[in-house]
Image (tube, rainbow over all chains, first blue to last red; front, side, top):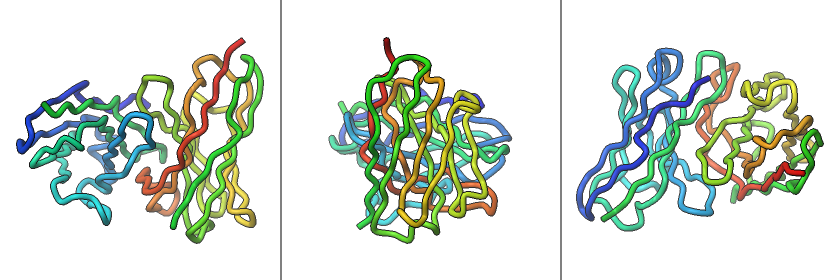
Length: 110
Length: 124
């Protein structure tokens, strides 16, 4: 049950686009379309941004999008805004019916 | 409005026990699987356990298996986590979260609503 691999940090300027990767194995990310992405601001509970690889829950900005290729899922944020600065986590369903998170990525808006 | 409110956290000695509760409202409680997720201070999220709507299916992370027990009472709209043989490394904020889907035997790990969390500190 190893954590999914995410970059520790990414950064971008307002208006730019950034992509955060999430690499797993064929037993989790690559095997199922059950990858989710969460945004967490300091001291707050996580917020679901993307479910099932690319589904955006009601109320989430269209600037957020998700995709997957093989064992790697990606979260793209377009038109970066200051309020997007936060920690981002991916998660996946696994072949033994359990869950696994990525280590988290700190997004800095320059 | 969907609400999840955790309680029961606190300071406990290593080897001790604690029972966390999560009170839910604003949705048909028995229709959803639920998860416990924790976050150690300054660290990332860690999935801990999940339970199906009928309690038939329960799953645990290797790090807590045999020490933690997840349960729910659909008559009280409440989720629980009984934590025994606590260790220093169990120190974390514990969140309960509602899973938005179900595979037939397991939660999708897609948590659409979260509580505010309750802090568990294991220390002598």
